Length: 555
Image (tube, helix red, strand yellow):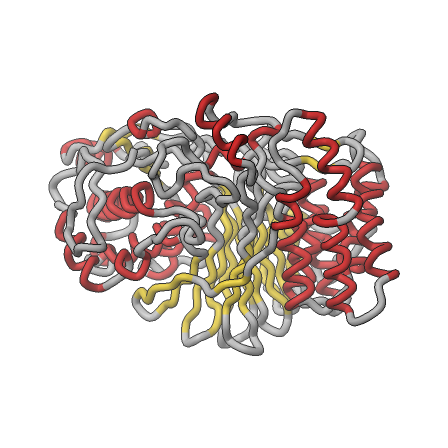
């Protein structure tokens, strides 16, 4: 089983006021009541804090962070990447999800080529339509308060300071968008929309089209022109008084919701944190949830995913008895939510994602953004524009008829999965995790650390975790489902406790001890009584410049 090793560190800058030219002490946790940013590296966290300190809201700050990440965290994210984006509005009390994923090339001949030759995992032929620019500008237009010129300023300073050879070209591209915004008559919203259209429909799109043709890519300007960022409602469930909100099945997000529905039938608290019983039942619930993910999830614009049935009381009652406390499942066991059967035949058969970063941000008014920007290298890059492209097409597969199979214009079912959790209708937790198929495994565990065992983010993030490999590899596009299968009953633990290992092994788990970091989460807790936010990120001994920041530091 592959893991995201501890090659990066997400720390926290606790600062009263951070702006360009100012520094702050680094740590991996912080609290504040004037706004908070959990992202990284330092330049990106500072970009978000700068915007908040100038009166911007969470959307303004998040857009500044995400554009900055395309430079400061290049390799984990790029300007032509993707970013599932969730926004809680303190004004309306509602959550909006921006569908931050681009589709496959629209030409059927291109799709036929992939089926004949396979989907590559790197390079420009592995790219979907670059969506991050559209996602950010759509969110800024609809829910932000600032101009694009204001929120892009920290990124332009970073590019102008010099670094990679493509920095000047990307800076010039971004300044073209600023120029269009400034020259367009009308409202703030109309100006931002015009800037977005220049990227997807104007001369920038023309230049991208030339690059696609000359590089052998299958994307075309027509694919850019058709792309839109859709806003939708989240998918949610209730768990012991909390409302957990995720993106729909164009991500793996609902797998966390399915696991929680199953676990609600067990007294996890009485089992004890990281006890053999707790690890076992949580692992078995994840196996069942991931089996359904791998058989049913896909782009809901293309396939009819039975999400209501998958999360229903009736289906949950059928599925949770499959969890045997004295036995670890050795099989992939999806259910049949349509016909309401606990088991539904053969399963559709880990995680090697190398590029994902994180973003959680809240402002002083109570608005919250959770987003997970990503783009796995090695990128195809249009050097004349400085625009690197994602490699997300390999999160589709070439098993014809599968819900996540490649089709013209179809979005891949991605692992990127931000989370916003409400209590009494207001945010209490927000999370973002880097780590491929590990993302919802880790989100599930740190949420349970909080909800079942009373841990604050600092303690939850630094507590031991485990991971299963009993699932499909979301980065293997093969047509043979069995080649996409991980190690059945495989489990890795951040523990060397012989008693725990022996008891799990006795139930049939194939146990390995993990010494590295299991994914890279950031977690923010919002104290609804005091208005103070508490953030934490993964503490490690290896520093790559990942950070978070808080305005108005408190003890």
